[in-house]
Image (cartoon, rainbow, N blue to C red):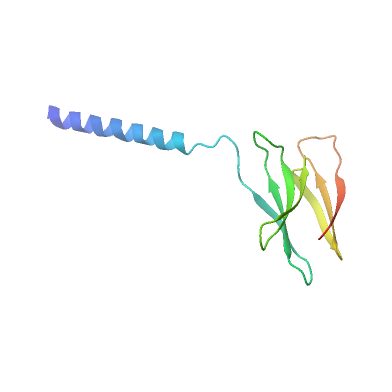
Length: 115
């Protein structure tokens, strides 16, 4: 009986240590979720995507425009975390961006000429 309890105790300790090591090795300090906000087709050219990238230890949150076929980054807009509106005019993309972490900061309208 004493031998069985010792084996169970050792198994529980090994399981607890294994779980702790697993949790410690997969722990993320910063949120790394990249969200696609919009996918826009440029007529007779290609598709672009508008993405939100959260802040981390070395950069602030920003909105990024990428070409979807090859992942090429076309433009970054730092200090923004929300896309209020977007519209495509011929070869220009109008973005209305804001930073929701500041109450007094107003929205900004930015124009991006698509290459």
